[in-house]
Amino acid sequence: MAIVVTTPTGHVGSRVVRLLLQAGVRPRVLARDPGRLDGATRERVDARRGDLTDAAFVREAVAGARTVFWVDPTPHSAEHPIETSQRTASALIEAARAGDVARVVLLSSVGAERRQGVGHIDALGWIEEQLDATGADTLHLRCGYFFTNLLLDLDGLARGELTTSVSPGMPMPWVDPRDIGDIVAARLLNDAWSGRVVQAVHGPEDLTFEQVTEILTEALGRPVRLKSVGDDDVRAALRSAGLAPGAVEGIVGMTAGSRDVVPEQPRDVVTTTPTTLASWAYAHLRPALLESIGS
Ligand SMILES: NC(=O)c1ccc[n+]([C@@H]2O[C@H](COP(=O)([O-])OP(=O)(O)OC[C@H]3O[C@@H](n4cnc5c(N)ncnc54)[C@H](OP(=O)(O)O)[C@@H]3O)[C@@H](O)[C@H]2O)c1
Image (cartoon, rainbow, N blue to C red; front, side):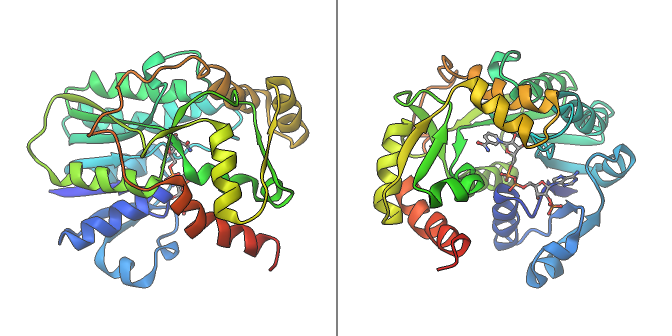
């Protein structure tokens, strides 16, 4: 019985695949373009080429799987992000309901416990509930804010600005997606859990954007200042980038709806992961930034 990994080329999925290979497992990976996997990995996996938005592909590709690692692939820029995430997950939910899939590990998010009012994260709450109702064993990994989100505004960082609509002094969990991959792989390989499990992944410490700015200044070796903006500024910027109204509200809602979220799972030894923002920024953000500014 196979272990199925979705988004094997993503930040989390690529780490999961590597650990499964190192554990002696040949995972079945679902990829739009298996050619994007490095050659050595491609030889060691059972790659199925297809799009996760194609329900027939997903039904066939997950059939008979012991465990599926599901990552919602819907970009925040989708015209109707919540509906698209729901529709995309439906084939997996159907397969779990039909008994074709025994266990699902879902990459979820802090805030999904709210179920509504957190923008695109609402979709993850819906997927959690639907999977729970299938009777399959489910593990929802409610993850904090990915370090890799910082890679999305290299132009801003090149100008020395870290722009956010998150309240500057609000502590929140920041996490390296690679560390999430470690936990996913450990859970995929552990047959001892069953039922409905929720586990948070909170990174090494809660950080405010003010603290993040200081850490980046040090790690990047260049001054970074915080540029706080309001929700309407974000709306205007996204609209002028051509995003549809549904996408704009899906993105704004994630921040607006999370302002007073206290994660349902408290930080503890199980939720805390090792990689610090300082070490990640030095190893990954700094070279990416230098490359983007051509030096
Ligand atoms: N960012 C955060 O702070 C945060 C926090 C909590 C949870 N999350 C969740 O984390 C997930 C993103 O994980 P990540 O950062 O590891 O991903 P990522 O690095 O952004 O990569 C996206 C992956 O999705 C694949 N993909 C995109 N559209 C697809 C499609 N239609 N069919 C098949 N594959 C598709 C891409 O494959 P290709 O090689 O084909 O492009 C790629 O492997 C999202 O579900 C998000 O909700 C994020």
